[in-house]
Length: 332
Ligand SMILES: [Zn+2]
Image (cartoon, rainbow, N blue to C red):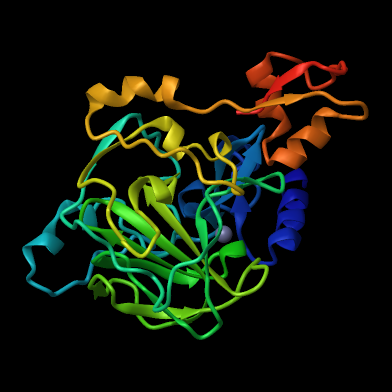
């Protein structure tokens, strides 16, 4: 009965027959009177939750077994396409196929290209950056466009996903030859299909406002094995369209949304080898707020687009702490 009740609630919340991870397998087994067989439950997607400024993934199960994990259907003989990058964790039904894996930092990426293609036909205007925004993680950058404008693949690769994905709206995910994925969200139209090979600069869709978009723009994310990376760390979004370095080391900082704010560009220092990442700590810019009359932790956090939990952690103070005028609060 209890399980039925949860099912009912979740059915109403999601509006379809999906089950969240909060129904553990144990619960399912203990409710064996219910007709659901454990083997019938397969993960078909996941939802992002933000807990204390950290992004966690909850799997979503379908009720019956479907052949979700498709074999790849490419026929192109390009040797690069035979790369295992396009077979491991390849699933066109799931936005993040690495949701249950932990990526260890730092890791090295190699690009064959020295330059990428602009994702839009006109000059790129970045209207919002990767970082904390309005109390939420903003995991990509926003590039201005008008609904119906072309959206182009920034590098060559293979379309891994072309579906509606929650607040992203109509979304295309392309996996590139080095395993990196780029995500193009809020589209109005798809111009490619899943499993299609795309060239750098190829039109893949039209821009729009689908999902939770405030006005038409392209929301562009860069992900590696499920983790979002600060796009501006890898790519120069000026008209130079340069890949910052063909060999680049990604540290935890460049894949942590709360270490950045969407309002201003982070100080970008590129690491081309594992040896030079030690400079990162000394290179990061610290910002301090001096407490004025009427300031609260929540007010300071909102004004600076930093989570309260992060300020408390940085300053080693509890969230309930009373601030004193003149006190220095480290923001990031
Ligand atoms: Zn965005």
